Length: 190
Image (cartoon, rainbow, N blue to C red; front, side, top):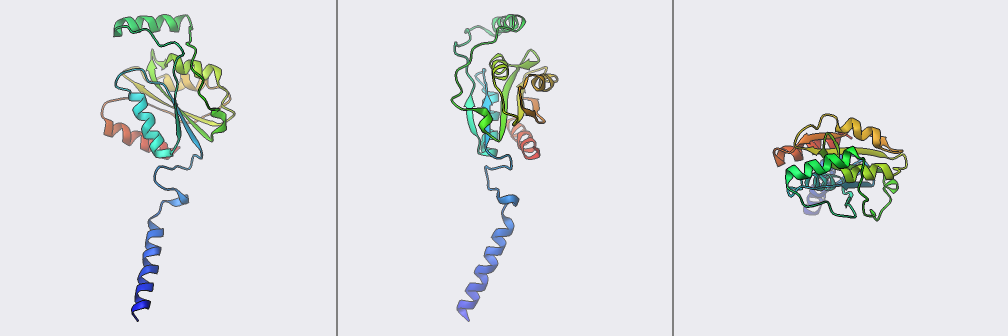
């Protein structure tokens, strides 16, 4: 009688544990997006875009690569940097970026993170989009802004070469818990 009781309880526990597992065989840190890649550029000391990239990586178990200019940007105060950035943008002087070390088209889903600069993507992400063929794969933008984030997703969509642009997200960094919640909701909806 004792062995049957233990066996019965064990079987019930196995069924209860199976019922509590996420659907589709997913476990924590996985998504239904397949093999994912997070490409991002961050500039500020707060590293808002990098922090968002890490949240996405945790949700998707994605590989993560920071996009970096070959030549570091000049160290200027905020006002001087804005003037320098506007000049680069007006002249369409896109910086050369370091080799990514991977082929984005070899992934099933690609996230691209950028700070919003002058209402559009940052200069290094501009270079990435100009020079990268995404092999027809799904691509989604996450953009972190201090202001003027309204148009960045539409501009991003127009710049992606050979990619299926999916719904992106652009928002201002106010509260880390709020950002994590918004990103989680967004990723789960893709």
